[in-house]
Image (cartoon, rainbow, N blue to C red; front, side, top):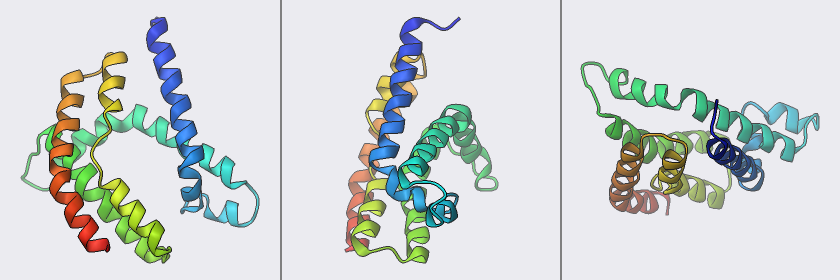
Length: 165
């Protein structure tokens, strides 16, 4: 059985995820999976943002550890990355590069492009440690990832801001 505090923390985290999708992610609900439905007025932008948040939360809960493990072992042939190096590679390098490519193809306005690329190049949020601590996760791993991505982002954010300016 799940402890009451753990369940409450999970519910608060889920609600926060959905709120973030509503407040921030609703703008990206026009992205590939929901673009036709939003464009055809079959689903509202806010409802699409809700689904983006819900699916993002489900993916993080169900597959987050597997993604980190796969990136660490199987992304580059004959190269094994530590889990922390895999997180840094995904968070600080791959995410901004992916957004750069996608938003360049979509021809979004310059302000959205700049904000999105820089935002996704920021370090792992401190709330990661809080959630790991409250939900019985790997506190040391979360703490190390917050620290290393913060340290790495000192250089990478400078480069990203210079490139998008």
